[in-house]
Image (cartoon, rainbow, N blue to C red; front, side, top):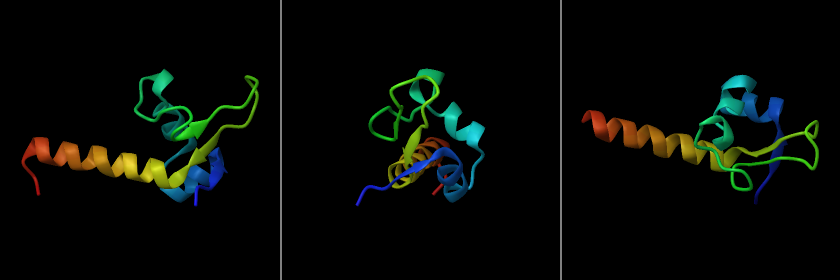
Length: 73
């Protein structure tokens, strides 16, 4: 079941800072996609909510890709 969390709770659960989490947003050059990994609210000041499970999977996938490119198992 998908459970959306606000930025502080999501960052804490992922073990990263709020700033690091936000830097991974696609419009900031990252790989986390709007409406897949996070949802923006209707206004600039709205709370961002995050799907921690999907984000964890995305980090894992990128880590596996990086390891395979380095020849590390």
